[in-house]
Image (cartoon, rainbow, N blue to C red):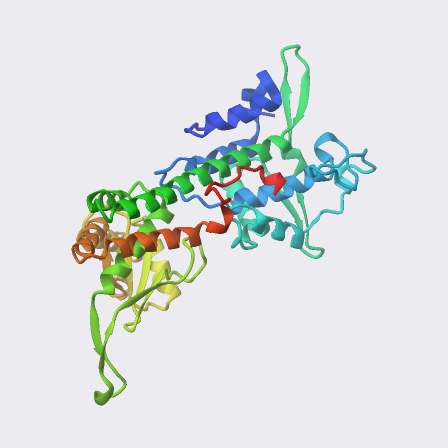
Length: 412
């Protein structure tokens, strides 16, 4: 197989280490020759804290569960049979090649995805199309999708050709290596890294929340760091929500169905879903004013206008992970819109739907006001709560000593 151009990053060395355990001195050759490993290399850029890439797992797990099914049925060794051994792998010898395998049932794969760390809320999109679509964008010339799917029977297979990597060894002969188990180990390592990073973040939240009672400056500095443009998108959204919820809860409006029933009510901000949810472009909703909020890390007119169209041009407040001023962001969006649509009336109709732009500086100023009002602890507690929700984490996951047990995903 020909070599592919693979850009390296900090987690690449972890991938190479996994391959070295499996393939020894030919690890680098296999890495360079495999489009699946190249794809995983690209999809693990978010391993380190502070990465701008989202730490999402949908495509990782779609690949994971079909490869896991392939391994469990013994095909990684050219064997397939049942029953499985206690460690999840087939014991006996195969009676059919993988091409004759009936395929994994969608319901089993879908259930398995949701059993994995951070996977409790995953949907079917990655299994059905998104993994294949994204892989094709990275490797348009390969011509083979990672997942083969029969819509009628709802059965799924991994593209076995992508698991078979041909390498010319030092003796001049070509050898075929099966990378199925290596793929599982790479994804295991990535998830473990992300989990450790999140647990470190959550523990820092807890510690800072406690320290904040006696040393609020440390807590303030910590929260401000989570609002920086280079912070993970999920963390930014969580902290933004906690800050804005506390800010607006200090503000009131007078509202009522009639003049006689008008009363003063506090503004309440609700988080409508998870950061990667398909929720129609609405991240937060404010009661009783009915304001919509969308968190974004881009200044791409297509993204803004798509969100606006999803809610039929209902006004949206955009919370933008940017150091640029609100006026600069608005001007940049308008300039892109004019270049795209040409017609001023069309551009104006969209721009009117951008109710407000809240940037990083605005969030820091809001947080400063919240702290001065004595609500620091409220913000810290909300960050902890929302972080647990976002990453499918609960105190029940901890043992009695407060630590989590490290396990391979195949052992879950």
